[in-house]
Image (cartoon, rainbow over all chains, first blue to last red):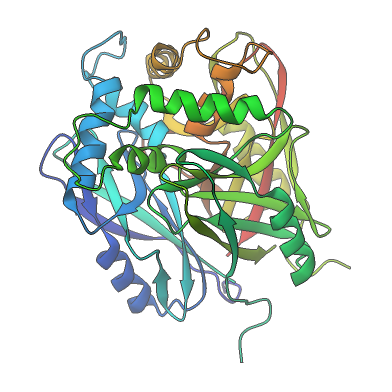
Amino acid sequence: MKPAGECEMESIQIKTSRREELVNITSELQALVKARGWDAGCLLVYCPHTTGAVTVNEAADPSVMRDISVNLSRFIPRQGDYRHMEGNSDAHIKSSLVGNEQWLILENGSIQLGTWQGVFFCEFDGPRTRKVWVKFLAG
Amino acid sequence: MKPAGECEMESIQIKTSRREELVNITSELQALVKARGWDAGCLLVYCPHTTGAVTVNEAADPSVMRDISVNLSRFIPRQGDYRHMEGNSDAHIKSSLVGNEQWLILENGSIQLGTWQGVFFCEFDGPRTRKVWVKFLAG
Amino acid sequence: MKPAGECEMESIQIKTSRREELVNITSELQALVKARGWDAGCLLVYCPHTTGAVTVNEAADPSVMRDISVNLSRFIPRQGDYRHMEGNSDAHIKSSLVGNEQWLILENGSIQLGTWQGVFFCEFDGPRTRKVWVKFLAG
């Protein structure tokens, strides 16, 4: 039997529709928290893909997502001094800069976010079917 | 009643004085750890603002903070190909690159840092009154 | 006596051989997990150096590591508008962009990684003898 509070990681599937795109996954994460009955603690959202990332940023104005995506490609262009033969070195670099993980605080079964914040899956080499792993630590 | 070890998140207020600035919050965090009696585990410092961030870097020479701040603005300039109408897309981009969260290790009631490390709130669209949320996980 | 599940942080030593280099430390981390008998939860890999970082990215093709390293230096060059006198401001900036920490999920004593993922220590001002701190949270 597992120790109290121990649980396996969960997974959320995401379908992206463009090569570069930031997809709001806040409601999917909140729905998972509710379905599992997680109450208070911290939630790790982990991207198992090496050409994607997870971030928290403004969810109110979609222009912010567009500005992030377009401007990352300005100084990390698709074509450049790359030796990796799959043509997606830019996506790997962006993944390590934005980071493949994001922690969120849970209180009373609710993801705590700043007024303007949402959680975004960052697609840098789509379109693809992606997933993020979700792990809850009570506390 | 809350399960043993469970506690709500705390908050630290920060007043920034310039548009772009890295503010050392290490002593405020350590004071909070002492006040709450947190002993061993991990501490999440979470920025609920979408134009700020949290990072760990050198605390000995303020030039390092200046060099980080000035050079981020070199390749993420304030004016550019931005559609977000609030004039702070650069700050949103920096926030996702540096990241809005930072974890620290606690042992014996003390934040464990490398010799030269301090914890910094990164202001990218100030001056403002800001806050970071702090969550402790025992372990 | 320590509360159940509480343990002190561990450390892994890394010798780097160039100024800039990404070193795969996945097997060292997995060996530590096995040696400590850690089963399920989350693992924090924390870099106590201010000119290094930790990231997860593709482990199959070493060109990806080379492309990340070379291209970071393209927009964060070694020489530039820097006031820090030690000649390694570029390394400090890269450290805050990539981030000095990385979380991993553990299940059944095994680090959970995506198909192509490995964990890398990022050296930005070597060669040096470095270390990462490792902290396990059960859950």
